[in-house]
Structure formats: structure tokens, C-alpha cells
Image (cartoon, rainbow, N blue to C red; front, side, top):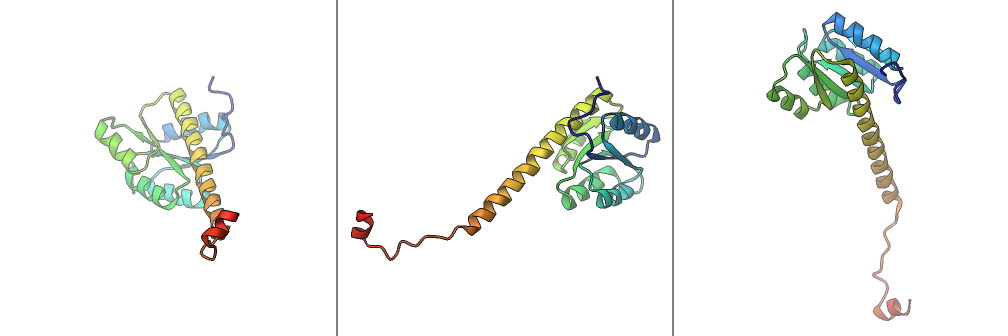
Length: 165
């Protein structure tokens, strides 16, 4: 079931985790689904990779050296609004989940995770991302079109003129 291509095949996904085993297994899984996969092993390297490659999605570990995942998450979401983030965490309590979601995570997964769960969440997050980006583009287009519309002035018309129209 996991071997078929994702509808988002070709999208770039960055995995940022200091656990080499998780990175290698996740890279293999996502490449089989047709994604272009990049990896980083700390928060600073993750930020540089996001700046250089603008991935659609970052799979980001909560606890990493150099810069933790929460700090990296906040910077990614503030600098790159079209880059969505799914957090990995070994800490599964509600407080951490709430903190991550408030900081801008699209979703989070508790480690160790099941491959099928990861794949489903990635497709869901990428679907939401696609809709939100299209929505922002439509809003910009609407605002642009509204700016082209010239306001009509009716101050020169009198009541009899209006009634005869």
C-alpha cells in the first residue's frame, strides 16, 4: 500500500532529525512515494536548507542539537509561510502538542511512528497547503481586480435624472 506514488509526487520534503536511522528510513519511504527528499541533522542546517531549497514540507524533530526544533519551527513559519512543518517528538504529552501547534506546526507525530501514519499525514498536510496557497492567490487576484475598478460617482445626478434612468 505504501509503495504507490503520492498525488504530490515530485514535491520537496526536508527531514531534519539528528537520529540517522530515522532519517535513512524516512528518506527511503518518501523516495518510494515519489518525493524529492533532503535531510539536515540540526536546526541551523535545517534553516539553511529551507532557505536554499524552499521545500513544500519539513519533517522536523523537536529535540536536536545546535538549535532545537521548536526554535527552528518558529523561524521557518515566520520567514517561509508556504513551507509547512510536521513535528516529530518523543515527548507525547498534551502541553508539547499544544505548544507545537501554536508555534505553527501543521501536525505532529510521536516517535516512534508507523510509516503508514506518516504517509497519510504528509498527504493531508500537503493537501491543506495546496488549498491554502490557492486561496491566498485568489485573494490577491481579487484585491488586484478590485483595485482596477474605478469608483463611480453619482454626485452629479439629481433625483429626476436617476428616476428617468
